[in-house]
Amino acid sequence: MTAIGERLFGALLGAAELCTVEIGRQLGLYAALRDGPLTAAELAKAANIDERYAREWLEQQAAAGFALASGAAGFALAPGAAEVLLDEGGPEYAGAAGQFAVGVALLTPRVIEAFRTGEGIPYSAYADVRHGIAGFNRPMFDHLLTGTWLPAVPEIETRLRAGASVLDLGCGMGYSSVALALAYPGITVRGADLDEHSVAVAREVAAAAGVADRVSFTLADAAAVTGDYDLITIFEALHDMGDPVGVLRNARALLTPGGSVFIADERVADEFTAPAGEVERLQYAFSVLHCLPATRAENPVIANGTVLRAPTLLRWAREAGFAAPEVLGIDNDFWRFYRLR
Ligand SMILES: C[S@@+](CC[C@H](N)C(=O)[O-])C[C@H]1O[C@@H](n2cnc3c(N)ncnc32)[C@H](O)[C@@H]1O
Image 1 (tube, protein in one colour):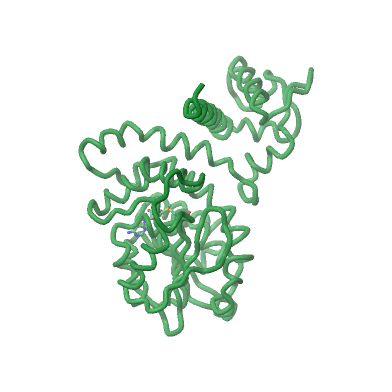
Image 2 (spheres, rainbow, N blue to C red):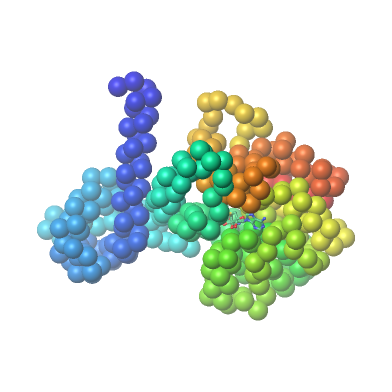
């Protein structure tokens, strides 16, 4: 097999296994296995599924290394699998990867059609992808946002501790807004997003976390939100916005004196390089399958796609009137961080 053939074989293996992960997630099969080994008959009963399918899935999961065959007792989760596949609030959770992959695959026929017509595909059409994004980003918000990222910018952190008014643009399902409110009891947070379903989920997330009195969500274009805010955050969303310079210009107008905009967007190279590293390859694939079509539905002309490079973001910030946009020295495998003021 040639090197490229081997690459495709590995990718096919990964894609197929991700689909089986999504079967396990949706049907609650991993959850059923959490407390110890189960035979196929026991799993079928516990998850209310067909026994023959249960056996095939268990054997396949063990073959893939996600489960262990435990003789007559059946199959158990492999060591470390529960943290990755089940613990949604935990730092190791990556169980949304299957949902993400299935989500983009489901839309691929529409993307093929979009390539022909040049049309966009609304963000709302990417039903599973929205949840995949939220599931993937949540561990970073729960474990890094207020523990590592914001403390790296003492001026922002001090302001939050004193009780600030925060606007979270492109808040998606609200996990960033809620994490901020939980860490800084004196702040109020307003999340804004264009996607109705995400805003509805975000309200539920805030209520479940007990912070709905300080965290509100608005269905709105980030370029048109109003109010006065000490801190404005944009997490992995600026590249998705139809008018990013308009959004930044609006954000600048909404800042109180001394306030700043804190942005996280993709950690990609400063200029196009091929072949690219793994993170950039992933971002490009999502750009083709999701971000570019979704942003073109909002604005067919400006649409940037997922790959938002630091020089582009800094240029947008200057065009929006920020005199000193800066790249922050916060380390992360996926995201690069910026402060605008
Ligand atoms: C990749 S998601 C990130 C969501 C969330 N910040 C997170 O990290 O989980 C991008 C979000 O930007 C939102 N978005 C796109 N264009 C927008 C606009 N013009 N105004 C507000 N939100 C927008 C989308 O609806 C989506 O929820």
